[in-house]
Image (cartoon, rainbow, N blue to C red; front, top):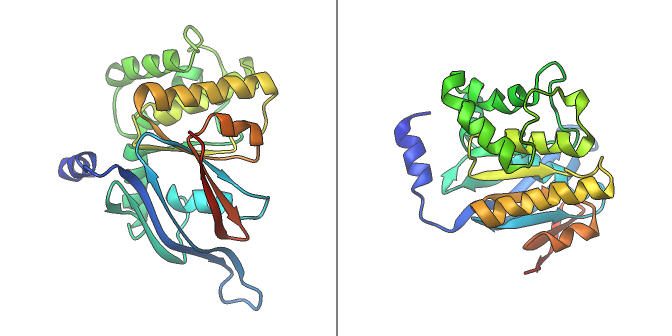
Length: 243
């Protein structure tokens, strides 16, 4: 990705960081029983807000997240991130864009068990070709930011579930992404670990202006977010301002 392209994205003056227009996703479109997972969803997301994506199982939440995080290709519709049309990019352009501007927190942590906490977090910067001297300070900074100082040499198997999820958060923000997506980040955690993870994510919004869009089933999570968007049967059902 060129320096000019990165500069153009970062200098976008609009307060809308993500704009989704009439997104459709149809699986097996040529079969006798196509699955209409998304049916014309449109939504806007502001910079520096924490949004929960809600709805019953099968409502289209994860499908929506995969489209806007550039992990899948919508059947129809447009997606803009910081004013840039991203849904029509080539696979190589999407990969490059994700590395620079998107963070993603997986439900199952997605950590490599043979790598240390430090090494797992450093992976995105290594993928961009930085050497250890270049990225070491950034990695240590995010380790401290998520409350895991002093644990950089530990392997994932030596950490609790909540700590592993915070490693996943640290890895997703080490490249200072414009937008962070989280797919049910507390689904596999107990109550106390969930609280710590959500407190960490809320602090990223309050202290650093991070934009977060989170899929969740948990009603208790609503006290952490600024807004909720509800999907039902692949359609936008309602939006609620919570702050």
